[in-house]
Image (cartoon, rainbow, N blue to C red; front, side, top):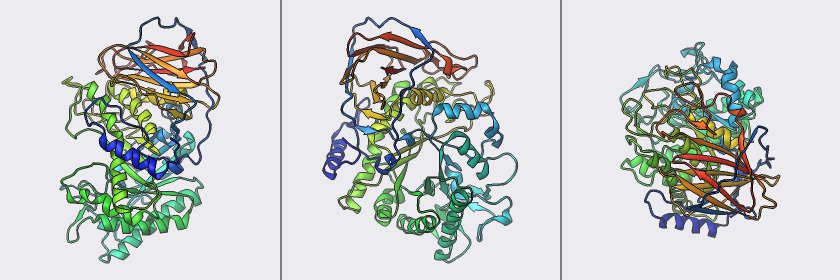
Amino acid sequence: MKPQTTRAAWMLCMMLGLLVSHSSFAQRAPMHGNPGWFLDDWQPKKAKLPRHVERATAPELSPDVHASVDLAVPLTKVSKYIFGNNLGIWVNRSNVNKEEFLLPLRDMGISVIRYPGGNASNDFFWDASTRAECPPGVPDTIWKNNGRQTPPKLGRQGNFKFSPEHYYELMMSTGSTGSVCVNYSYALYGEEEDEDVRVALAAKYAGDWVRHANLENKLGIKFWEIGNENWGPWQAGYNVPGRGSISPKKYGEHCRIFIEEMKAVDPSIKVGVVGYQKPKSNNPIQKRWNEEVLPEVADVADYIILHDYFTEFNAVLTPEEMFASVDTAYSHINVVNQAWSQTVGDFSMPMPIALTEFNTRSRATISEMDGATNVSHSAGLFISHALGEFIRQGYGSAMMWDLSNGYADGEDHGVFASPKERDVPVLTPHPSFYHYHLYHRCFGDTYHDAPTDHPQVRVHASSFSTGEAGLVILNGSNEPHVVEVELNNMEEANTAYQYLVHNDDPLSRKTYINGVTGPHAAGGPEKYWKIPARSWKLGTDKLVVSCPPFSANYIMVK
């Protein structure tokens, strides 16, 4: 199916999504979404075969799992914006000058960096270094519905936090674009009593940031988001004393004003609006969010923003459950599809979807060893499966949460270790890093569907413009498997190159690549770029790979 899917094909995909079982370990039909214009600047990718090679013997084992891929039948082009990440203002700005931060980011192939960081976006004032420099009507204390209060967060305050200028520098150093989440909630809690005045002030303030970044600094930041999770009671502005709770319809109406103001500054930008991803909620605002927002923005917004942490908030996950949770990625696209069909009801596809925050979410801890933590080897496998499935389901963009976070007994979403993880050096890469790096190294520019006959073994298949194939073969089960992948319509497939990512203990914070790991209590090999690929000759068009429990094989075939 091409990205420019007909409405009839889209409706068929949506119906298939409704019909599939909701049990775990079930591979869903592909392409419930449509990356659309996210592919406008798609570029062909040339394969770079490994320079360091270790000759190996082709596996002589009987396969128990089978997959087939037709490399003449593309499913979709690969959006480079799938490989994004988040940067919070709390990260030490000195990292922008550290090679141990910048070089790995380049090796990840990071394409887009989101800023200023989730919930902080809605009480962040980007150009202020003192309270007096905030725009008109900003209160001294911003009240949140969960009982917390916070002073305004100032973009240029102090010498520690990542300022907008340091963010700009990071983008230029990594060759990435930005996804800036502007402060929508200022339009709700600003001290001006007249709503129209508050909204105009907030929209102008967002437009001023576009002007500063793209006109004055000539950064060409591509993506701009209007608020963060504004349907959530934890957000600034969700409920304002004397004004009541946020209205989804008014959010949509206000977005039109923001978009007009921001695009008047730079018509080339893409502006996204907040959507709600869950099919059910007891919260009346969340329940009607999409149906009231989408009709207001359908003709002016460029994309819909979703966030996905996949499991219930307090879930303690086994490695199998963590891996299998990725298979619900299709369902959040369907939530938007259904709301669009019911409320917009025209003959166009819904807007593309950007998953501007995602990660696994497990309440397991290191001290209890009660499951897979967010910094475990298993979490790395989750990230690997998620990246492939996001492409397969037609997301336009995806941004992991996040580059550097906090650390509490294994509850840490960061790619790099924070200072709170005291038994490893700061910025030690967590297992997730190595999967981004190997996707960047081994995955091509076009995705081809490759379903398997085992529910816990998955293959994400790609091709390069230069003819090679790039495969990610994932075993999310606690049993070893031998996987055979039939490579159809690939000319002269004769050599395989393998990077096996594995750990006998899936709960460990460490990971191995081709048997090599690092010296620290967490992470992987320090000189990951020098690890030799295992290589063997292929005698047929069938690739056979041994897959230990909870492992990822990154394979290039020429």
